[in-house]
Length: 369
Image 1 (cartoon, rainbow, N blue to C red):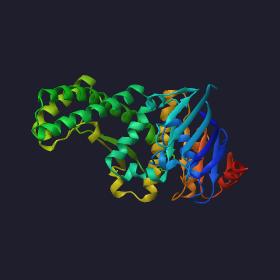
Image 2 (spheres, one colour; image 1 turned 135 degrees about the vertical axis):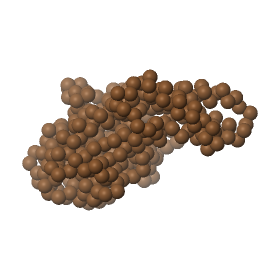
Image 3 (cartoon, one colour; image 1 turned 180 degrees about the vertical axis):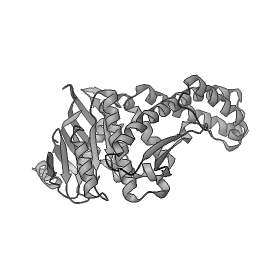
Image 4 (cartoon, rainbow, N blue to C red; image 1 turned 90 degrees about the horizontal axis):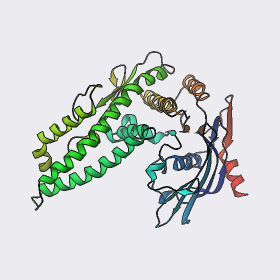
């Protein structure tokens, strides 16, 4: 997949800007706060219907503007054209228009433009709370597996309903306890499907991750372990077995869940354990090792997507090179040369071969003319 052209109107600090990256590696360089990250965020909106730095739609409006527009033209590796418009107006629902047809719900667009990101804010994946690692694995699987995304959305809806009922039961309100078994059965079904796909993903991803990481470091062995709230599950666990395990677990913890008014078991409680030489990186790794680990995760994700989809994802890499030595930077560039379209932001111009460097200031001046 390649971005051919993207027009920004009233998006962040870009009143009007047109961005046309090359098919290979494009580096956008300039001072901090000059709008480099916003360029990547606009591409991410087109691919995944939202920004990747956690901002709300309204926060992406240019100062004093009441709407923003992103108008992108893409082309698949099979040369199929694709247009995406993202329109946001104050106090109105955001619109996603693909090939001149509005998309609802937005989840139907996920996976159409495969995309991976790296940004400093995503360091929380390796050193932050379990929710960040769950978000990482959910995003990775959802872009290649529509059924997983549907199960994930359904699970969240059922979880809200079940938790609401647990609150009522805790407060001894006049509700039928039999309803709890109905929600529990539905939750167990979706939970089993989600955990099954996560376990399958980690098994396949681990092997590729170790191979790629070896290109950065010859004396460090990475690994990922799936921590399931059910306890230890074997990779051969079937959907039926997982479903039965969840039903049994919920039956065992029913009284405790009513007392605490919340669901205590399920994919929303799971975590990923990241290891380097059998030690948890969150506790023992240096900042450089943490950063390299995350970069390895993201670049492995690119290879994984390509194998499953037959389409090279767009790489959006924000400030990827800080805290890395020249050797690892060179290794990353060597890998990226085979990755298709990559857009990188940097505070300095880098004179690598096969790289097109564009100044953010020159892009902004062109947009103002």
